[in-house]
View 1 (cartoon, rainbow, N blue to C red):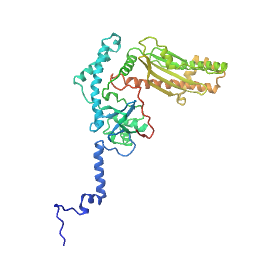
View 2 (cartoon, rainbow, N blue to C red):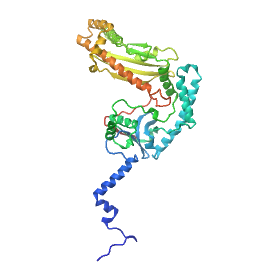
View 3 (cartoon, helix red, strand yellow):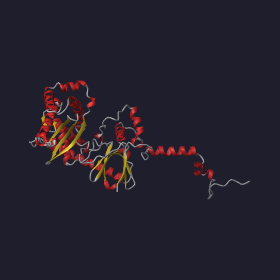
View 4 (cartoon, rainbow, N blue to C red):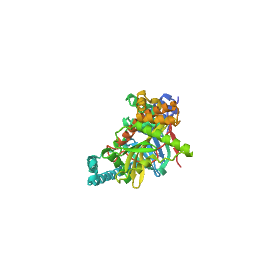
Length: 441
């Protein structure tokens, strides 16, 4: 009878008793082992479960990667927002980007201290002196070490040459990821969009509404002169003088109160009048008259040096087609050039108009007079005119939506003077419904 082989001294186990053979012969053990390893990797943020991602991933040429939200890119850098806790253990270039972001925060607070102190010494800033004092004191406390708490999120500035490939989350999944960050769901980068959606639903979060405000949870970032001046223009608009225009493409009018509602009757009347004049001109010389750009027309009405910002809303209404759009911008003069730093265009939804709103427009005396004139000129049938009235009523509702979007934008820049980032010169990634992958050469 053969004796059992001795262990050690160069001898080996039979195949079925070796660790490799044991795993091969026990499929359930293999499943348990694989699951344990996968769970450990997921908890470490090194593994993402299969499924559609809720976050973007940049793969770098040094074979490392970082997952977060791609904010955009300019000619030299990609800007990736990441959760600090999920990134601090990263290696390679990513660790260097994080270290540079932390170094730049010192510069950002020094800028904030110096800029606010200089403005406090000038009397023209008295209307928002409280804001300047508050921000200067906050900068001094941070610089002294009294309030130097690491930010929850960090914006990494990654050279485009270091990026080998980018994977973007789809439009809806991107929104889910942002809300997962906002609600501080544990290690959300390690979960797919479906599981995050379920987590948000359990907390009764409507992730389909507008994106949450995460700005104050980022680190301070240095600002160039243009960004600072644009930020201060929003403060002046909010706390000093609101310069506001409303009108149509053919006629913009300055109004005095940013909280005033659009005079839809007047706007629609001007629109009908303009289209009547256009029709007469077209009949006389066979050409449509040229119109000035409505944003440029607003710029031309600001003559004083201190009038270097404005908000304008323009109603484009087509009586023949019976539809329209409300556009709105916030523009700032930086040096000698005007820059639009916020813009939105909302189509007028005629189907969503309640009868009461349409009746309000129809009873306006100016509308009744000008619609009669339009009918006499043969611009449209009664059916077309009735639809134009409905468009006018829908414009009231659309203008309210536009105002709400601007208020959301404006309010985000009233809490602090260093975040969130205010940039209008970066290209925002174009997201598809199911996400996308782009390799860079």
